[in-house]
Image 1: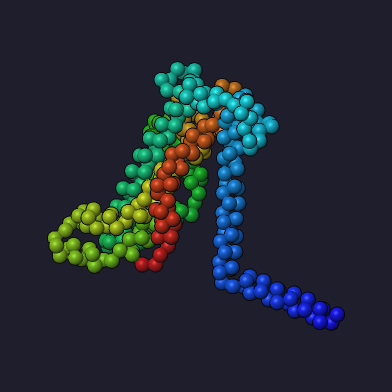
Image 2: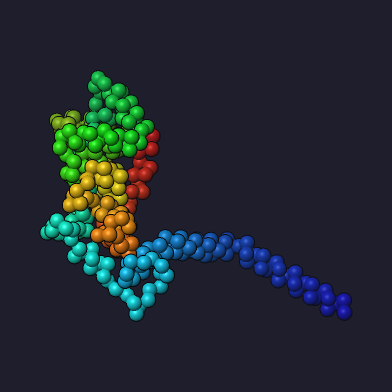
Length: 313
């Protein structure tokens, strides 16, 4: 009896040791870490995609009610009426383009012009403040730093009065000046931080070869700065799409509004001509397409740019 008990105890002990050895082995730890990592990634994707899936189902549900909309579509009760409305509904002014399409391309034109302005001004200003010595340079940097301490909405009244004075109210493209100039201090500091990592010996070598400042900028600095320029371009392109406050103050004409204002009006019951929360879902999904495309193709620049300006030169 004692021998049998000893054998059982010995067997259990050996089994525990074997299991412990397997669990604590480097290979098992690597496998467990991979499993945990993949489970975490699956959970993160589910958390991110669940609202998108719900919006997609809602956009394919007929009517105007958000009640009883689940994550799974009712295939027997699906409709593309909200997407059709986006591309057909016109305001009472009888515009050539549907309201949503017009506001979408209006915002797209603002985003493109803003990107061009921001990149040109930020690169030229950052280059000048990094490579040249001139009187007032320190004051310019301090002024830019001081501007960043105040939120942009504090200047909303000033923007309104300025636009009214120069007859720029209800001029969508005029928003480019606010978006572009408002982002200059931040963008210049980011670009300047990156340029500090470009050796000045390259400029000196170009000077020996007789290169002008413009040639040094276009042939040396800009090619080496493409990662941070891409980051600045992405930020500038995305700025107008989701901004509601500034356009709502400066653009009151229904024929001149941006896509963010148009979408907001679809959630306002006091505007029966626009009101339809499910149309908002459809419009928001379409609005995400250009932003998603830019983020996919410029992802490496976004990741790089988040840290480039903070590096010590």
